[in-house]
Image (tube, rainbow, N blue to C red; front, side, top):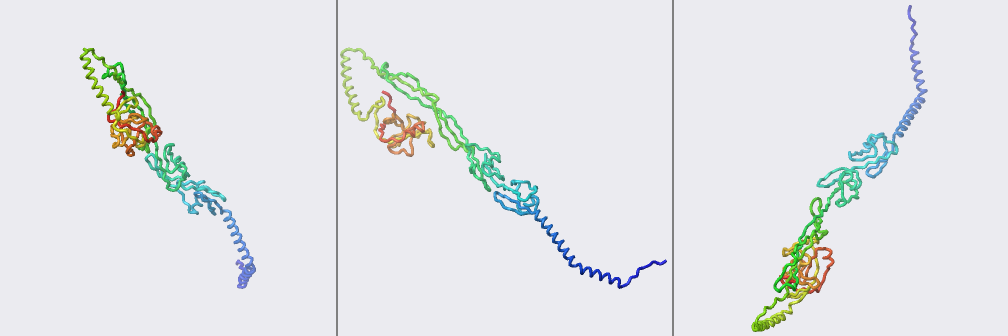
Amino acid sequence: MGVFQPEKTHDSKISSMSYALRWKHENLRQISTAAIVSIAVTLMILLLVYSQSRKQVYLVVDGQMKSVQTNTSLLQEMLDEQEISLKPEDQISMPLSGAISDGDKVVIDRASPVKVTADGATKHLYTTAKTVGDVLKETGVKVKETDIVTPAVETAVSTNTDIRIVRMNKQVIQRHESLPFRVVKTSDPSIYKGESRVIQQGSPGVMVQYIEKKYKDGKLVSMKMVGKKVQTVTKDKVIAVGTKKKPVPVVTEVKTAVAKASSTPAKVKKVSSSSSSSNNRVSKAGVDFSYKKLIKVSMTAYSSGESGVGTRTATGTRVTEGRTIAVDPSVIPLGWWVYIEGVGFRRAEDTGGAIKGNKIDIYYDSVQQARNFGRKSGLKVYVIGPVKPELN
């Protein structure tokens, strides 16, 4: 049996193509409209997604704030987008891997390089501290009240701030000074003239001076006396000098008469000698003495406690209150004793750059007492000589 085959003709094929072309022609406008609508919808969806993913973030860097528009979702991505790089020492208000949202505020404090020098060592570091004091706390450097901090602790930190700490220390030591004893002579009517007796042996005293030493970073920079006290009191040596007349031995009348005759001229001669030197002889403070000249001077005072004043005089002796004065050697020779009205006996042992002419600088242990002395003028000074007069 054969198979039935539909009849294929040329006309039927042409008819199908014509139908397709006709359908396409009739629906082209609808197809175009649908395509345009589809594209528009796609664009709207993309714009909606884009607008929803775009964020406004406020970025604060070293106190300066700016607004940033971004579509990134992580902080690190936003910083990369803005070409902002960070150092490990910088501080940021949120993790770099954290997600950012619209309206977020991100604060970045950049670390500044600073240098800290203390105790002989220098540290270079980066810090976000605001003041010098904050840097010192951050680095663990302890500062005492006596230390010197440069710049001051309240100074704001900037790039390459150079911080230096100078350690200031004080130390008070004791220095012992020997106080020489005086020799005091007193009249004793129970001892014959020309004889003497030691009533009390002398012993030197001890003065304790408190010296304050200041050190800067371990180096001594200044030294001054801040106080003193007598540890051992000086004990004067007392010598009794006889004033009792020796008894006259009993002799014959002839020898007595001769003795009287021979003694008469001697008395006349002694009186004459006394009257000839009476113009250069005076009695002061219970002491009779002769003097070389009488001058008038202006007077100031000084102390070894003052800065730059030592304890050794120009003659090599140690300055002693109640004895030492500074003079102009051309007016009063060094080593000579003088008597100053209202002051007493003093010895010319020292000199000074400002001591010229009729001027005297009197020594005191106490700085305050030297300052209280002030300046006095018109004082009478008896220039005696190298030997101090003794009590009559």
